[in-house]
Structure formats: structure tokens, C-alpha cells
Length: 508
Image 1 (cartoon, rainbow, N blue to C red):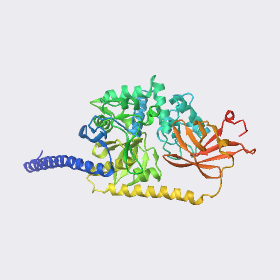
Image 2 (image 1 turned 120 degrees about the vertical axis):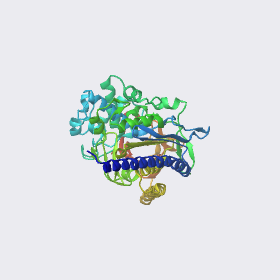
Image 3 (image 1 turned 135 degrees about the horizontal axis):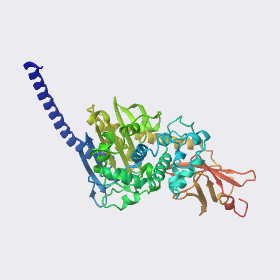
Image 4 (image 1 turned 30 degrees about the horizontal axis):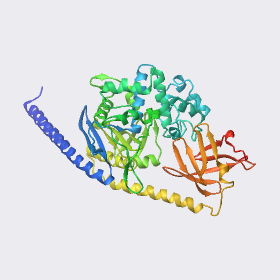
């Protein structure tokens, strides 16, 4: 039984608690004004056309807003419903689809991939025998992602079949190696198991129940939408220009979802509430938490230094990175595709989360990190860090390293050399079992390289090595047979053999 004194102490405690809560809420509201100001100022600094931000606390969105323009030419503004490509943030949706099928007993995290895709094969015998859905989703198959495949006109099934010819560069389950194609395969499995397609499943089982009415799984659909952001990139001269939409629909399960701030707020609420939305459970708590649980350590390297500069320990779950950030756990995933940058972050201890969507590639990726960490600091109440200064310095460092690499190449170049054969001898069709065909042609006395949608002039470097440009300069080296005929070329670590039927009548 409480005494009168105890009752008064309890009453005083409640008054103080409610006063503090009211003050905290008022402070939170003031923070949104300061966040507005920060975004407006930093967008100008980073030349960002448009930004869409959603912040969730508990089961409610507390900040859902578009800033800037979705189209510079027309001046059309970004609003809470403007669609942006979320890139690799799509991966969490693919993992969620598998979690739903696992709840129904139709798939298992540790089920062998061939149980769901009968023709699935990997080059390494051990990986081929043992590979599971969990291995696909945690980037631990031992293979690097054959992303050049996305430039080819292959179907999703054809790309999955070609994984059988990708040679591993690490032991099975020994190393984290980010691999978009394994998510394509996982999404393809979702389609086969559900009797439809990955996109149909995501729409029916995730978008519709969450009320994500504007979101689409197709870039083609997004491009046609009335309220979609135009993709932009920053050129080397500093100008921000629009670019054509990159159709990655075939890559869908790894990165083709387009969404808005309003819709992403619903996705975040669903994630924060252990698979429940509006009182309805869509994923079991166990399987949703499995996606957020570390599965493999992400080693030090470029991914960590660029995207997670303050992390002492970084790991990957299934469709999510798990980062310790300044003493706090963040569950998150960045997304990048030509002309767009995105970020989704969950802060479990606060029962809060947020998304950042930007219609700028290149520099937008860096700005996404600046804004993302600024919001994290604000929500966690941490001392402010000048992330803009940090990432400007990091960008300058990478630019200097790239220039140094080019200078290193040039310093090792042997001057005065020439190709072993006349340029016409290098013409022809070249084949690779994973990537298909590439063409070397001669026009106006100059060789050029074409791989489906990728084309570039070839500039002689030394001997039988040429330079071609794809995002940056790369080397392409031809090899000859014993009789002097051109046999193959190697570029980007891939060997293309000359097709027999493409040899010229002169024997070259």
C-alpha cells in the first residue's frame, strides 16, 4: 500500500515525465525546421536537383517532404509522392518476399537454390552442390557480380543460366562480395515458387497491403508516371545534366523499384514493427528479424570507407547492412543507379527510421551520405559532424587516386610501340560464355569496341593493348595465336575469344 508521501512522489514524477516528453516533442518539431534549412543549403552546395525525405518515429511518419525540383527544365517540384529509383534498397523487398514464402513453408533460407530453380548452376563444384538462398542473399557465393551482363539484351532466365560460367575469385562462403546477379536469381526463384513473377509478387504481397499505391517494380512504368523525378548526373566539368532512364527491369530484384517518400514511410513502419502493418502481420517476427541479423562480416575496403566511414564493425544480413555507428546500431541499405541515389535506415533503439531519395547520380551518392548521416546524428542526439567537409575531402582523395592511377599507367607505358598486326586484323566478333558477344570494328582508320549498348573508340596504348572508356578508362589487350592471327582480347578481367566465323579471308 502506497503512503501519501509515495503518492506525491509518483505524481511529481509523472508531471516531470510529461513535461520532459512535451519538451522533447517540441524540440523534435524544431528539428524539422532546422532539417529543412540544412537540406536547402546543402542541396545547393552539392548541386542536387531534388530530394525526397521520409522520417518515421514509432508507427507514424513525422517528416515526409519533397524539396527541390524533379525536372530542372520545367521547374516541376518534388513532392511527397514523386517517384525515385531506389536502386539496391530494392534488395530488402526481395528478401522480404522470400521471408513471406518461408512463412508459408514454400521456401527456406537454407534451402538449396536448385530446389527452387532446377537449372541453377555455379562454376565451383562445392558452391554448385551446396549453395542456398541464404548464400545468394548474403553475397557469399565466392563470385564477383558480373554486372556487365546488364548491358546485354538477355532475359532474367538467360542471365541466371549464365552464372554457371562465372569463375569464382574467392572460396565459397569465405568472403563478402557484393553481387547483384545473385539477387536477380533470388527474385527469379520467388517468381517460380509463387507461380508468377517477382514483380507481381511484390505488388500483391507487399505494395498493396502496405498501401504503397504509387510504387512500381518497373523502370518503364516509373518513366511514364506523371510524378516521377528526372535522372541527372554531374559531368566532370561540374555541370549537372539530365540523362536517359536506365532500364534495369531485367535486373529488377536487385534494383528496379521506384518509390516515393510517402510510400517509403509505410515500408519503414512495417520494418520497425517486426512485420506488422495496421494490425496485420505480413511476415513472422522471426523471419523479419533474421533479415536484420548479421550473417557475414563486410571487410575493410572501398564499400566501408565510402558508405560507412564511422563504422568499427560492419556486417550484412539479408537485404540489409548492419552498422555500428558512433555506438549505435543502424540497419540500412544504400541504393545507386544511373541518375539516382537512395538510402533507407532503421534505428532499432529509437524505433525510428528514414529514407532519402535523390535524383542525382555521381555527386548525389556522396550527398546521400551527407544527408543520411546528418539525419542519424539529429535523431540520436549526437554532436554534429560536418559530413559535407568529410565527403568533399574523401571525393578529392578518390579523384587524386584515379589521376595517380592514370599517371602510373602512363609512366609504365613503353613509348614507340605499335600493334603486332595491321588494324584490320583485329576486326571481328568475340565471344564469352558469360557475357555473350563483343565486336571490334575499323572505321576511318580507327578501331572501336562495342558490347551491346556499350560503345567506345579504342586508343592505342602500347603493343597490342588499347584503352576504351566506360565510366572511366580501361585497358583492352589482344592476344595472338602461334601463327600470328588474333585469338582473343581481355578487358575488365574477362576474356573474349574470337569467333571462328568472324575471321577474314586473309587469315587474320
